Image (cartoon, rainbow, N blue to C red; front, top):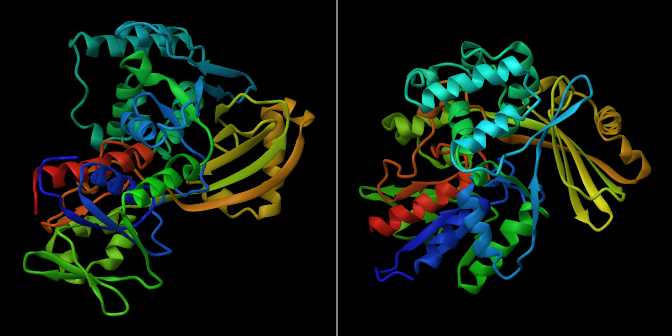
Length: 439
């Protein structure tokens, strides 16, 4: 609790982002209410049925939130996983973070990673060493270049780019290497792989987003007296001279607060804004230029003795990754997925299931000894944010031009791709703004 007077906050959207914002704010003694509407899901792998994320140690805000909301149920997290790459020739190579201090961590990890040919490892090491010793600096134009071109410029071969860097970029951001901003890719490589050993440690979180995040936060917020206001019709935001004056519901009633937080996707926020704001402020006009990428996934459940969670990044195959997670004792979930693959999105469901079944058995032959319990197709139109060069300038910060309107969401300007960490970071930044600048 803070010693400052509490603020009243109305949050639009009760998905992961809205719940996280309410959780942080009420923990500081502020009063919050959440307004929700059925189509207001905030997207980007945050649906209750989505698998809980595989987290790096560098996803600090997500770990902090998990620690707070699951403090009463310790032992829910699996041990660290290797980052595995399935190569086109059938071999599987693993990247493991060396448990060494400082720069020795990434040096040893790089040299022991056999997914890259010796020439690629050496040229990458030489480049990193020069930057580390400050004899060379990163180019200033990375935001205007694509990651594939930048990797070529530092001597990475076509084989390295296709077999290692492309699957890694796709998994980290949902974007193809040939389209991804080099600035975003370099930032992710730097903060997660070139820091401390703990930053590069990959851990699987059991269960679903609902199990680990959404349901626990809702329970805590209900205990704190937070109001949840589901709406059958979209509300209307009313604007006055000093910002938002209230939110009008279909029955004519108006909800008022000192602060308003949009915890929606950028498309849903745009639908609530009047035309004059879009033409007056570039902040809002840029939202229409953001693009999202769809995902197609094939998910199977098996009764089997296989229990070890795995993440396989795939090169030269129809799907881009395979995630194996434990559902319960002797039962696992196997999900093959691809983001931004229009051709795969057009394949009929029965053919997708057959394709997924063949791919799974080719990648994990021992699965044949298990009993398949189910198979389903999952389609998500908003799985990732397109991060082409220049996109960083379009992503909004949390403080909007409207004084009492804050904007949160995985798609906002957090320095991360549109993932769970980005959503949680944006929610915490809203809390920091309210705590430091009362309306």
